[in-house]
Image 1: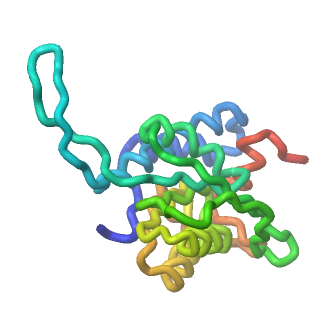
Image 2: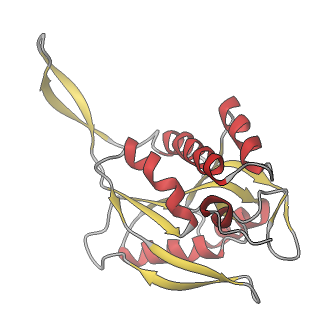
Length: 210
């Protein structure tokens, strides 16, 4: 599998345009994030392993398929929470573990303040959720935590990424698979993605200040 997958779908382009619009209200912003998360999840789960199972339909017995691997969904607090529910709908048997990080505004570096990952029995697949992959600092920190847990197959789901962020992430973790709806060309002097959509957490949870 290519370790960088960018959605090429009309629905992704449609929902992204609404998401980027400065006039999109928080409730609509949240719904667009959820719709894009579901599109990303479909792409990110396309190669999950299956096992044969015997089932009996109302008509006759047959051999069906079920997921074989344990999947851990790992949202980065707080903005990553907006991607959890639609993915949980597709993977109701998945585990959800949380990582809390915030960006130091002076240095633009991530600061970890919460980690709920266990210390043993790692999942087969870990999905890191963060709507924005800007510098990639928070996501790289999350991948480090998952590797420390022992997860071998790590997949990152982001709505928008910067070219620089993806390159920096893959320089450190070349085996991490990145799934994005769009890759934007650059970061500004404040390390925000350009053209991006602003602060995803503030827009999602209506905590913007004028």
